[in-house]
Image 1 (cartoon, rainbow, N blue to C red):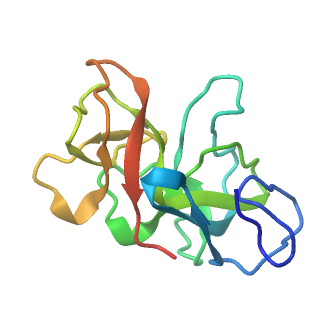
Image 2: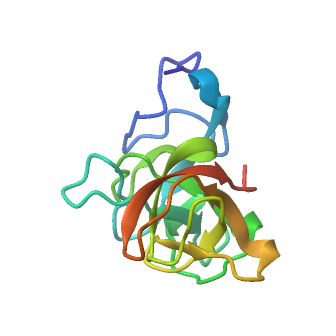
Length: 163
């Protein structure tokens, strides 16, 4: 896992701002290519959930409704355009805290039960993703596994634009 010059890693979470908002940390991920992590502020009242939460869920982070850049909330806008999505939390970022979300590269997402391997997906609501249908402007990744027709955490290639 990579580190910034300040010694923070993609899993660093703090109530103090330790890097500029929008800072992108690029980390090699073996045979999966590179991961790009973008530094955000969780401006919501709920945490952005990830692998280390009680209920494991990988929340999409989208811009808050005040549209302050890199001030994000748990994905709530079904079919939000790609430019409003910062990334997907791979670890918990508490409300009022700063941390990195995975903007691009292989990671995990939580699906709504409509995503098959090889299909593109878009944000749904409550932080989940769903099959993109014909909404190409909202695609934020591609499934590397099938969700089996139910809510599931699956491997995915994430590709969000904000950052």
